[in-house]
Structure formats: C-alpha cells, structure tokens
Image 1 (spheres, rainbow, N blue to C red):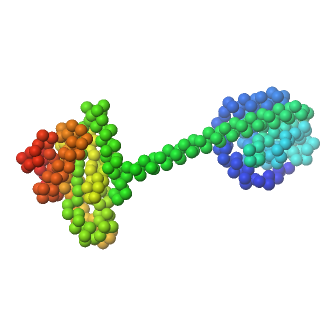
Image 2: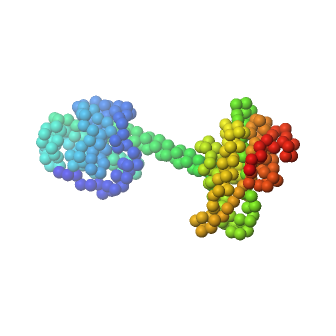
Image 3: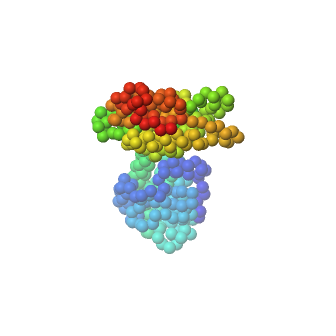
Length: 361
C-alpha cells in the first residue's frame, strides 16, 4: 500500500532540502550510528533513511549495498507519518506492506524505524533496522533506536549549522569585497580612485620591496575640457570623461591600473615598466584620445586631446611623494609647451626646457 503524504509535506521537503544532505558522500559519524543501531537491535540490516519527493535515499547502510529506492517501496514513507517508532514484526501480516515487492520477494519481513524529527517537528526520515525474518522487537530496543535516531538528528543539525556558518561567512566576504571595491572605485569613471592609488604605491614602494621595483607613473588631464562642459553640460561632460577613460584603458595591459585623480585628471600606474616602455605606451594613449570621437551615441562628434607627464621609479624619484611630483611636473610641462603631448622630467632636472628628457608630440 502506498503511504499517504504527511499533512505538512511541502514544509517537510523544504526542511530536508535545508540540511543539504541528499546525495552526499558517506561519513563515519553516520556509519558509526548505523552500525550501533544494527548491534543494539540485533538486526542484519540498518540504515539512515531520508524520504525525498519521489525516492528513499540512504545516507548510511549496514548489511546492504542499496543506496536508494522508489518512495512507494519505502517502509519509512509510512514511518514518517508519526513521531513514534514504527515496528512491523511480520510485514506479511500487515496490509500496508503485504503486497510490497520487497516483502513478496522475501527480502524484508521485519522493520523498525525511529523517526528523524527536526527541532520544528518535521520528520525527514528514519533510522531503521530490517530483517528478512519476522521477529519481535523489545521496548528497550525501541528506546535504544530512538536514542540513536536523535544522534543522527544531532549530526544533521551540526551539518546544517556548519553549512549556515559557511554560507554566512561567504556572504560576509562577498559583502566586504563589494565594500572594498566601492571604496577604491571612482563613481564617475568606474575605474580606481585616489585611495587605491596611494594604497598601491605605498605597498609597491615600501622599503622591503622598493629595491626590486621598477614602476612608471603617468599623469594626464584633458586639454581645455571646460569648453566641452560649457558646450555640452556637466552630464555629457562626465560621459566624455568616462569614454576617455575607456579609450585609455583599451591601451593598457592587464597589470596596468587606471586611476581618476580628480576633476578631468587621471593617473596610470605602469608596474614593471621603465621610462622607455612608459613613454611609448603613453604616446599610444595620447594618440588614441586624439583620434577618437566621443558622445557618438548622442549623435555628437566631440573631439578631445590630453596632456601627459611621465615619471619612473627609481630613476626619476626615490619615493612615492617624489614620484607623484615628478609625474605632475611632466604634465605641467606638457601643458606649458602647447598641450596634446608627453613630457618626462628627470629627477635632477630644473623645471626648464633644457632638461626635458622626452619631448614628443
């Protein structure tokens, strides 16, 4: 006879799913309890049985290699209808089971199942013992089986707690990651902000790493950007800044970093790149900006250019402050010499044209 569904079947299945136990690998903690149940009850077969939507799945077994059955064959599908131990001394004499293929094939005659009851009162399955011979089952054995079933439930609760803690920890780490990303991301451009710049340089130029570090820094800002804002407004001006950043980013390698420094000024970090490499790459950035059209999706053809200053650690500067200053001086020279160009100032050079180490553009 097919067992009726529990009155709270939806809640029961949801509770079972919350334990995330179905189809997991064998675990010694459950196997030890199952073995003890077989010994306490003097039964050749024992199992931790969980009743899912359409199947009976065994978390642990003794005396059988079966891992699951159809729910319609499961004695445990009847046992989960109550919180009491279900005892079937001889299934041939019980109308619920007499026509069960497991009984008619003489695989099962005796069954006893102690329900696995959650703290909320949902019955997930049983700790059960079986025999191919009919037999009696004492009150002491029933109490022992119930006690062991509670231990199975304690293991399931421990597993759920560990899983919930791991999930909570993962979510917390993800939230912290999002907060961290937000804290070092510029709202206008979507790239890094000055906090990231200083943290990155502090780490890379720390005394314990500086001796093995080569790093170039590029300052650039938009030429006559105020005219763009005056003509198209602040919102579209901000769009131009984002599009310029995307164009520059397209010229960078995976390890390079683009930072919005403020206003219409950006910084590019070029790790492990000397001045020659940095100057060549900066020329490509400059040309990419000058040859692109911006705000095309607004039906506009906005043209722009930028001026650049390049400095390299340790050749042009001995620390972070000096590196930032040297790159900024290079940018100042590019502006002073007519814009839309790249300049680099040597570390010992006075601020005049005679010491301009690179004057492309």
